[in-house]
Amino acid sequence: MAKKKVSYAWESFMENFFERLSYMQWHDGINPDVVLGLNEEEQRAAEDLLIESVERDDMWPTRGLAALKSKKAIPVLKKKVENSQGIIRLRNAFALEMIQQEGKYLPVIIEELKNNPSHYDRLEAAMNLRHFPSKQAVQALYEGMRDEEYLVRYHSSESLLKIYGLVPDIVQYDEIFSLIVTKTKEGKNTEEEYAKAIKLLKEKFKNKTFESYTNKE
Image (tube, rainbow, N blue to C red; front, side, top):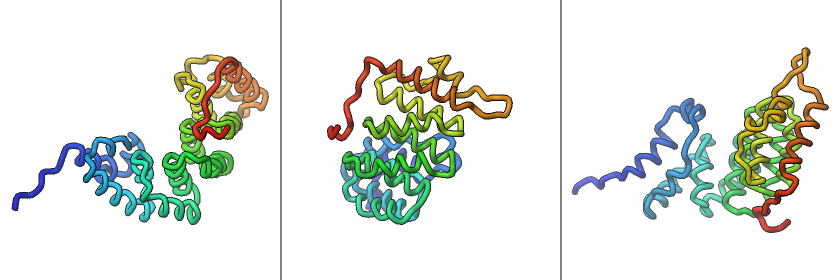
């Protein structure tokens, strides 16, 4: 019996999620939307592989399950949020919120932005929040603009731009950007600079609104 030919879409999925070196996945990112190019049978198989990968605490399968809006993955994702910490907890919460869109796991993402000791995890939380336009997310991102780490402030400001329908590129706003990156002689930004950057960014949003992703606000 002839071996079934593997589609290009399946090869792309496997390469993105399972065959690339972990460093390259981290450095270059992954494209979770490759799962959307799979046919129905392939999507079912991919869903099972990604759920198994979540159970192993691999780093990226949650993105694929979020793209698939996988209802099947919900139980294992919930278990991981309940029993994990740090980046694993964050990524599983992100996937659940992308799938369910109910606001239940938004506080988990916000908590990671506020309290996670790793600034890499905090900046990822800041980037995640752009997918969930809401008063809660906006408030947390303004607080993120006061973070001690520049990259967290940077991504918090860009997520706010995205939520309000602007190009998420804070470099375009010279004064705000300079306030985010400028440091004192002691190597730290001042609270006054943070406050001014937030005030200027709020002025950009003065006549703009956004629709809450849960339609509950």
